[in-house]
Length: 395
Ligand SMILES: [Zn+2]
Image 1 (cartoon, rainbow, N blue to C red):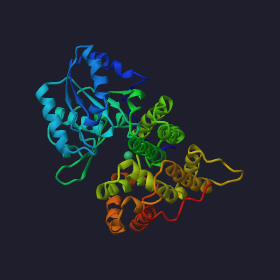
Image 2: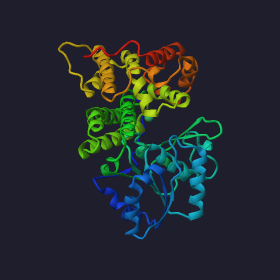
Image 3: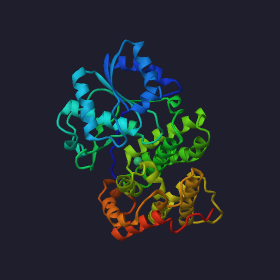
Image 4: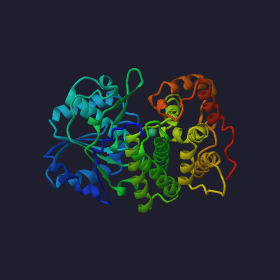
């Protein structure tokens, strides 16, 4: 018999090129005539904000803009957005941007409805009251935060990550408009795409995976793997952008229904100590995590290899296929012009013992198919930092 599970399907998804033009009428359906937009300055400079606000003017919806969200949003920026939200007596919140803007909007919404500080909501199911209607407009194909019950905020004082997971914070609506992703710079395309790919793979093998998340995670992995190199090479191709946006959204729902694993646990210390962007860190450690995990989930890693495009040879066993999946992922990283080890990205081996401890303290490590011990985690870091064993064997 299968293990127990509970699923929340809470977000209404509207997909289409130019779909953002319907933002005003959507807000009207929530009786919202005064809103807060939570975003970052890049979105303002790129003209994306204007596309969204044009849709508000036609519906006579008044809006205030908080554009102070930074990558890895902090409690300080959440407080600033909250002050503006309180001052304006808003009816709804619209998040425009990557996972950072969406997570900051979730946090502002929680504090607006419940009071207190972000840290009060660390952990599972700590939110008492659902907040205002929240509409998320992702402009990267990466975190899938528009579908999830999770927000990640950095404490401005301690620099620790505050992780809050509660179904009450799931956005009510997600607008997926691929035209908004056309102007993403290559670095963001790669970073967000690798985060989506890594999350899809980790959601598929997570200890919390279930029959629903499996379907979404595997298909999301396949879609992203099929398109990430294409979209890197042809950034203005709307078909590839659409596939990536839908793949990342599907991944978000999969992660929401299961969780992530060791590559995410390892990525956070790499970001904290060396400033490596989250998705790049996930991608760089992922082949080694896959090699480590394959013996515990050989059937699933075979499916992942197939999703990544590995051809099944006659009579090949699951373990061999799983390992080939890790090699294939490394080839994909080469195609995205990423170096073959983390030393080349400025990572210092002296911090590996510290990072191994920190990785084992992450919530995500408990969802990896098997929890590595300290020595195994240390070895995983050495492998990724040195690029050993080399995975450039070809398939
Ligand atoms: Zn991630």
